[in-house]
Length: 262
Image (cartoon, rainbow, N blue to C red; front, side, top):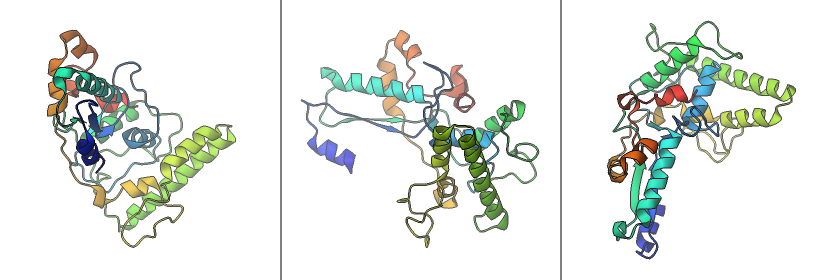
């Protein structure tokens, strides 16, 4: 609705560019590889997987995991603003560009999970709250596609809650109250979020991970990358190398996004 309103009020005298990112991950290269500034989205999942907390899901292994590095998203913002400000590019409707990877570097939950599994198995963090090894996608019973009504899913959810509470409490005792609150806010959901059918809106104690980790949210979306590719073709070669506008992962000789979010 907001885009429709902008489109209706748009004029050549005030050019507008709209950027639609998918899931924004950590930076892949510039200015600081592997940096992320918040605990939301894929970076939060990756960190909690490393800690041995979120090591299961109701989502299918072949689900599309559309993640775009933060620096690539920033480059698209800059290029979109520059394009919209050029007189020869002004048009009767706003410039709409998707910042995505599903149509340029298709990644699935299997691939994302496997990258995290290999990385953290080789170099686990000091606080490691899992028994034995990290669960692999190639084991006999991979921890994906679990039924939300199963007893094992309920037990794992309760165990995750306890692990989150234990880490947050330890951080508070160590004098890191701000970090503790940041971690806990990623686990607890906002009171206004509605969970599954039949659950009361605003019940305190429900959690962001529980909200996301439902089969109802397991669906595939493919975003069109034509806009970002067109912008990239108009960039000079030197700027194209400095400000990549499409994410192609390994095929472009760049580090993979998931590995850099750790």
